[in-house]
Image (cartoon, rainbow, N blue to C red; front, top):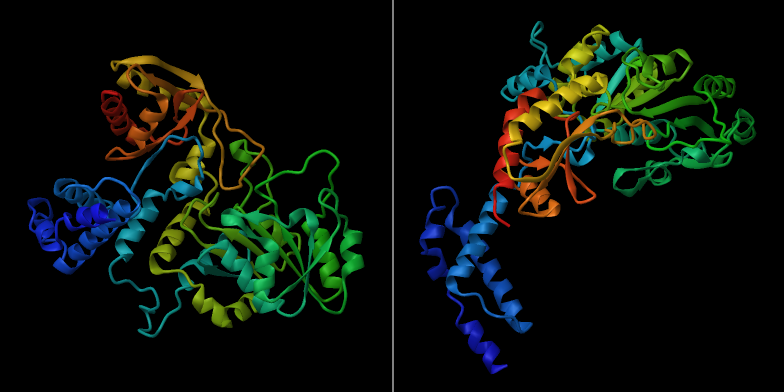
Length: 463
């Protein structure tokens, strides 16, 4: 115990550490109280380590630890990365990259803007007006409401239109979304009573009909976009749900999740339900995400009947869940690209990646190979490597793609991948069979030079 106490007393004091040149270099950017707090935290950690019998750091080591912690906190905000995973809608990497028009709109409205100001009358305006008319125009919906994500959209709908009443859902659609949030839990929090019908793999319209009562507020389809049940399976079409719901005076709500505004079969993509189709089939409200296949910012979009959307707007939750000006600006700019079927694949990055022909991806992989082949490699070659839509979209549909397979001569694949992740512009790749795969479907042409420089720089480091 005496030795431990002596070791603790040998630790440098707060003032001494603050006077070191490494910490003085931050004084013009960080106030002394904030630096002092970090110094004390590191000293406390050192004392705790000593109490566990570990060796005491010296003054220089402590100063280095403090500097590392300062730099970590100064760089704690989201950073741009190069997505070389082949997962187009990568939740960990921010899902949809915004279009050039959306980025410009965000930069422009980051200043003062007419978010809730009517320029013509000079009166108070409505932030929803910037997107509602566009959404209605594109999808044929009577009205629309934007909130901050699709889970929020579902919560608002359930709480406003089905609180203390029953909502009937197929057992096969009681999904769990990212972060372990489950549909039944969201429904319970919203105040709705869940009525499960059917089985995991087969639900018929007769199952819904048998469960309807005078307490039924809603028949809900939660489209299982993040998994597929194949083989001996059966589900109910939204048109049949709507007919049944309306015959009993209940609502039909279709939570599509993905954000498809209209059919994308033209791009060679598999058939997926979309907003216009669901509304035409009789759904009273349709819910979608803004940052999945729509390719815009994080948002939840509620589209459908005017009187229902008006009721949602009056809920106190609508104020709690409303989007910020940057999200409104980004969505509005993104929606403009959907006014013509040829525009999204040219203008919206997500749609460009979905629509890209495999030979185009192969050409990009060959270009990257030519830029980095001068390095010291144990393996370097272009290979086929399927991409994915990601974020629960098209879970059973791999997308043809090509990757550059890299294996440095002087370091392991794991170390190389870590070096790429921690580079000045992080590169997120995949390690497979002790080889780093740089998938080119999610890398833009404009990123190739920077990507190549990063690859060579990291590969050049000694093991």
